Length: 348
Ligand code: PEP
Ligand code: MN
Image (tube, rainbow, N blue to C red; front, side):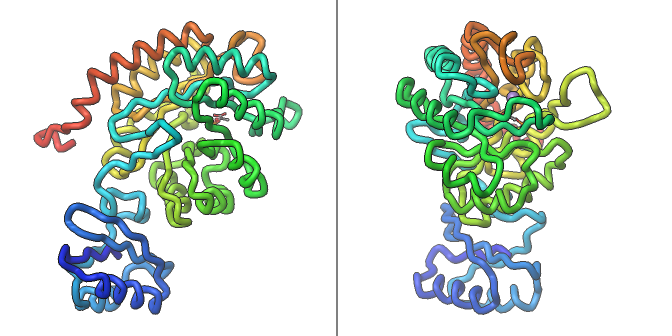
């Protein structure tokens, strides 16, 4: 349940709510709003009228609401204002445009540094690169592992760009967290709940990619695991889903962008590289993602895509990314005011 405290509520009254919540076996999450403090009291039993009635009677409580969605902390019902995730000097969400770019896999010092310098000069805000790769085939390149993480950290030193990289299992979280600025959860792990709990405990920014066949609701419930573990720095990434269509690698579900903006306060990134699997589709679908209201994009860039060890077909060259970044800034400047001031009449 969501307990809204009166603006005039005292610290003792808030403490009393917390105490009663602990007695009832409920976890408490705070959200300070302009209208006062909201406490989400969450437990496995779900909403109980008798329990909520008792909270409504407590001094300092303004009202008690029943959540209308299965996800709670990720919902706009709990937090109305957009979450802005801070990553070193960069911010993700809240009207900014985030451009994450870099190679699918880190292959060598030369390859990574080449791309890193190129995308930094083009105005990227984060450098991406896979060190632990979730490959469909066990015989495909699995990533450089720790050596890749070290190279990424070096690239950050050289360019000043914060870095995002995937973590594939709970046992890797501490190691990856030592190097990364943002932990990426890949599509194949969207519902790896022990991994979600583990990255939740780090309190570090986490980008959660949508599962290959994940519904929006399942995706938000996956985000909820990270939030429920005490980590508010969650970013969502739409990277295409499996449909009957085989003309592209996946189907970019752009519907998810406005849907998520309505349902959740979390920032939304679009990954047109994995969504399409084709280099020539990356720019148009990036334009579409930003126009639809995404907070940014993640794209794969390689100095020589035809020689890439993974995902070469969908990787842009540095000059292609440079041009794309420029175009996206123009599109964003045009659409940002539209998304910031939704038209009441259209119900957005
Ligand atoms: C990636 O971004 O490196 C990746 C493997 O993407 P996904 O999990 O979306 O397939
Ligand atoms: Mn890739």
